[in-house]
Image (tube, rainbow, N blue to C red):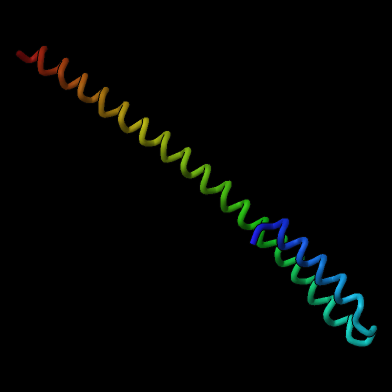
Length: 86
């Protein structure tokens, strides 16, 4: 369920709760509000996790690039050493 869809469903639920008798409404309204707060926290956690994964992907790409460059440099230097030793 998308965040916008969740929010619209939660608002719809709160509207329906407002039709309940006042003695039954309080507990259910509290639960609905807590659900909204938990959903926001969960979304923030997911966003932070996504940013971390993006950073990790970029870091891995950089490390792979660096590794390939190092391999090319080593190959080139070995070639120079072999040519000098002959």
